[in-house]
Image (cartoon, rainbow, N blue to C red; front, top):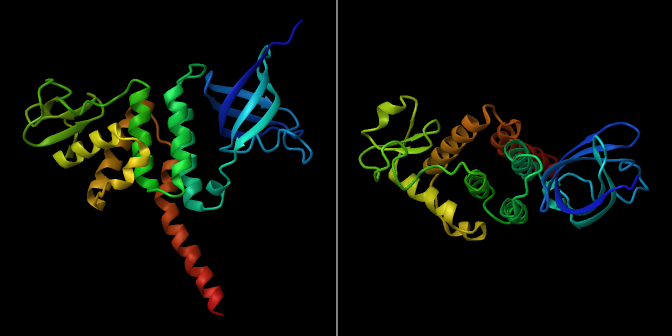
Length: 263
């Protein structure tokens, strides 16, 4: 029986030790979308696959197509994104991006723009506005996968929204004041936030640093997108909680380090 081999360029979204130095990986690949593979012996110190299978690594893989589960034959690192693992806040954001893709992307369905968006965002995280980049990643990802919220017109009556505005995850976007009764659970939102969401959706992630968004608007955008994603996934994402707490933990660690340095 001839073993079928195929090549992918992928980001490691999830890695789990399985015993005998094996790792079970969830990859997001350019060619096949999300795939699950086994990396036999990858945890061994001398393994040539070791670097390529690290969490968040951007790598090239040669994969054996198996009857039940494919397995990695060879792996070559393209980018390690090691800086994402050196900071608690960066780990939190990168983990959230990976978990979101893993949760929302269908298995075996390629999406080139989503693959490039993931790579671009991971490259920009360390030097950019990580919070805003994450919001952009959220809305761009859901748009690329067919869940784009209606922002230009009322999601219920299809007319330009006027008066007080609301956001309905269930109906699919912004509601005008007249259509608010269509979803009594719709969240209040102001016109400025809606306009900001349009910009975030339209602009390249590298351009987002030009935006100056005050904390109240940031919080509202975060809440709207969080509820929208949760509605479509029908569950919470575990990494979301760590993003909120990572900043506080980072401050505590810095404070403790400063105390040590003063002794």
